[in-house]
Image 1: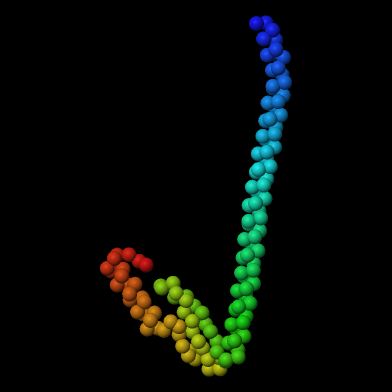
Image 2: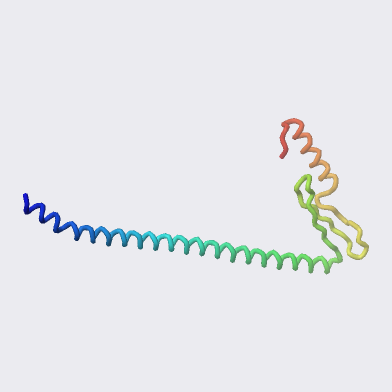
Length: 128
């Protein structure tokens, strides 16, 4: 029995060193995994920012084209939002006389939409 005990005690320091090495490797692997994850997140954020920037540029270019078209046909477009209906309203205006030529959607349609919301609210006691 004495021989077995000696062999076990002789192997213990070696096992402790191997265990420490494994722990260090695990720590390094975990650090690398976290760094890779952070890099992926940074790349995703960067790509999203690039996409938004391209979208803004495309929107600005589109608006410039629309404004150029207005000048050619002597019409102005006025955009507003009907807060009650949460709907965009476009007015076509003659640029020479500043008279409203057309409202899209029409005033009658806006009134109808508003009235329908009221009736639905009375029937269902909810707001859409």
